[in-house]
Length: 175
Image 1 (cartoon, helix red, strand yellow):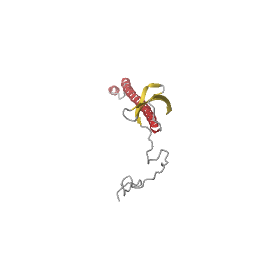
Image 2 (cartoon, rainbow, N blue to C red):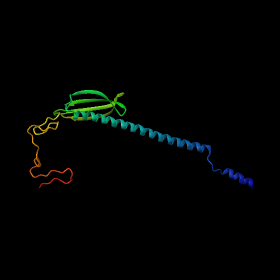
Image 3 (cartoon, rainbow, N blue to C red):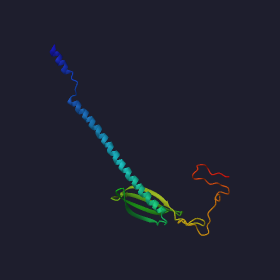
Image 4 (tube, rainbow, N blue to C red):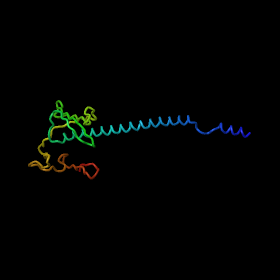
């Protein structure tokens, strides 16, 4: 009887076979490959979004410089390079006349300096001619024109108007 108990115990083995372990390792390996592939795609997408954001900033900066400059930009196209965020960028500024309006359209394209054909950002904006001071308006340097007087409270909105108080969030009301 003892011999039959020993054979019965050896047949009901509770461990894994080598084949089962290998199949489990293959499944875990395939899962890890998929996880690392997704991480790689996420990192490359993050880098691409960072590059596109910086390129948009560069293009917006070029347009803003033209808008705040006191000179009306000439029609034409210019290319230049700039260093930003430890990278060299190339940009092209194309200025054209807006038909039937006194405006200039500014189109800026930005790419890496080493690959100018791979455009990362295209931004468009408009620039108006510099404003000349009108009678009664102070010139850009802040000095009032000769013979000008400061307006009194209520002049623009009729007499008796109390303007808004910047320190109070209530509305200006008539007296």
